[in-house]
Image (cartoon, rainbow, N blue to C red; front, side, top):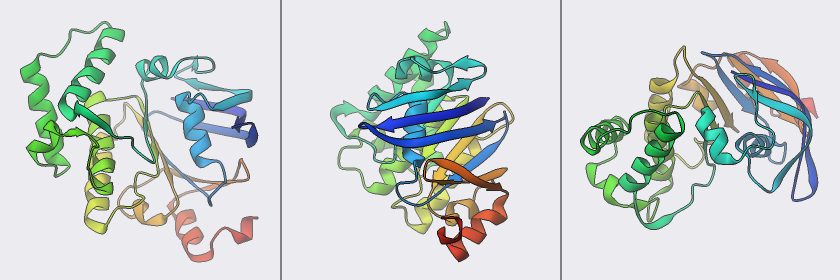
Amino acid sequence: MLEVADLHASAVGKPILNGIDLTVRTGEVHAIMGPNGSGKSTLANALAGRTDVEVTNGDMRLEGASLIGLEPEARAHLGLFLAFQYPVEIPGVSNMEFLKAAVDSRDTALEREAMSAASFVKSAREAAERLQLAPEFLRRGVNAGFSGGEKKRNEILQMLLLEPKLAVLDETDSGLDIDALRTVAKGINAFASETNAVLLITHYQRLLDHIEPDFVHVLLDGRIVETGDKSLARKLEADGYARLA
């Protein structure tokens, strides 16, 4: 699904990624952990095509297609989804309008027949209910006045409706209380299947109490320095990152 080879990247002119190699296969869930400043969000932003992240060497391929040089929307149409660490607010645009526009854009790019308004509203309400979001949530401005937990659940709502091939979730668990964390994890588990893949970026092992990763990678100084299973996350929780420095 995803092949990252010798990826070097800079953010605002500063080298951050120093040779990332990563393979994510269809049906797999990968977790990337690391301290602040290790390059986790830069990796997510490089995959999504954020303009202030410059790839200086290496390649990123989604199902064999190189992402280098593609606009963010072209990457999204190929099946890449990024859940933001800090979701932005769009006052004046209702959540329902925003979601329908996104789904219509995807369907147009894939030459699919657009969903009827009635079918879409039904799907959106069902997905919102799964994430314990009240129906009026869909009529509110995108993230406008939302709590931190609502913003993160809204990102998962977008993922469920867009049905990407690869979901990159950048610290989706940050700022969530225990109940919201369980709800978000439930949404991620409902999405993950044998036809897609998930890349979780997180500081903490607690999210992995609810989502079973196939692999856990430790990112330090812009490189993946260790890979293991879920037990690696528990070891990091107990011992910290100092032993890897």
